[in-house]
Image (cartoon, rainbow, N blue to C red; front, side):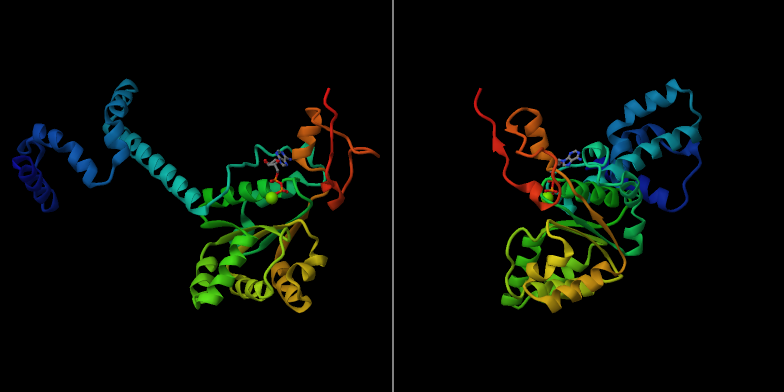
Length: 299
Ligand code: ADP
Ligand code: MG
């Protein structure tokens, strides 16, 4: 109780005119330091204070340098927390990075193109990216990696699958809250839509997706992946006109990356001897690469 009163007195003094150093009870201020750091939300400085001060003394920093050193620790910690929170909000299904992507394993991808996309200029411009290719060639990996790059550059990102997104919009239409759901998916600067074309869609899904794409058009970016070439999207949406309207907006300012080649997962399995290469060689391209492999005979 008494301590709180003292702290309040010190604060009031600070708020008006701070008295000369001689008039201040420095010992009391030091005692209140933890509380003041909390109040100023300087949690990193509070938690690491002893270590930071020891390091400042060891390096013989002057007062201004020491203050900068403490502030840098707080800024770094806040940035780390912001990043962790934004990554959580983005809902990535797993952690994948561009450093972890083996470009040698997927020669149809131009590393320079992906590195250029990693600068996120396309996100700043509200452009779209379309990743096409058979299963297992790294589409989701690249979506997560590029999405993380966008988060680390301060953009809001949301990752979802085509099924989840379209299921939600269909539900919104049925429950009369479509508007709210469209607004929600229009908010992030980058919306990542994974796996379009894997599963059949509801008949009205194409129309709802068109509404979303129209809203986001030239406002926010869409990063979308599909195992089906865009020529087949009328089958995916079950409506030629709607598919053409979606593609018109999606592709207007866009980068299309077409990946050809073997599934990375199956390559790994083949290497470990779990599967035999398919007759006619292991290297095939296009969707045919997804054909079920032949299990290796038990040794
Ligand atoms: P897709 O989405 O095209 O079906 P994924 O991105 O899910 O494929 O890839 C399947 C798995 O293989 C993931 O664990 C992914 O990280 C990994 N993978 C795919 N391609 C590569 C690559 N070129 N380098 C490293 N890992 C890869
Ligand atoms: Mg995938």
